[in-house]
Length: 381
Image 1: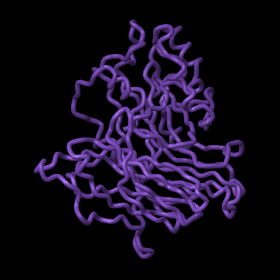
Image 2: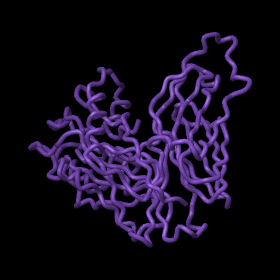
Image 3: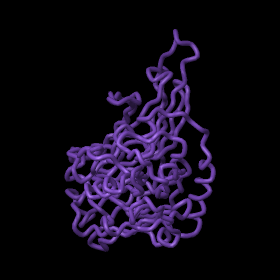
């Protein structure tokens, strides 16, 4: 388990506003639509720090920086009094892009929205509420309480968010920021993992952890798929990279295997399989440590594989590129550090805002109702 702090890269992709204007309201939204239906939800913007280890014997309080693209504190007359606020939650596992976090955290939020006419009665089921769904039962914890949701202001974001890990289970966690603005709420998940331990020298506590970083790519069959990764595990550990067609039911297929003998960054150059031609795919990595314990990390973006130029001769290369760990003398991939610290300073906010400006004006689309609803509620892709 390592502790060196390596300066992380700030993510430039997938951090723009979710454009809601012009989209059809999803099922269950009240017939008397609120004025904020066309309002662009304001996300939490995260830096791309791949791994973070919290040693509670040193300090159980972990501080995380985030930013916002703009202030959003003016509440409309037909909104809840705590609308347009941010809340933070930790979940005990990573998940693929096809699995969305529930759009609501509490039943009380739903009932208050119904009373105000933002939702139809009985429109939200238990599976859509984090507190009630069986999918995430026992697998999440609040970082900020429901009654301590934070205003979406620059001053509030500049203070970061502190997580008191004293009462949580040891293990590997992921953090997500939640924008509460009924009836369409928004999740934005933090890249990387957070490992909570009491004694970093104890192999039993040194559970395997892995994170993948990357942006959406368009590649041809046989071309390289480049991902950044980092691991923190009781080694040596075996990392198996797998891919699956982007679909409601994921069928994972092997892509490469790496032996990770040390903690830290892991450069992974993969080859787009011929079987994935003319499709979008997801990538995940399974790490098994020296004690046989497993953890799964998911890439945060899809990969689009182009059609084969010659469909009758579309095969994988005879000698595909083998993924290797970077040599000790090689610089760590930007953003893929494992640290007990977090990025600070003005450059952090400026980089995130510049990245947002590059993506704040997406081309207009005509999504289906279900697709629009998924984008509005979660925006995890």
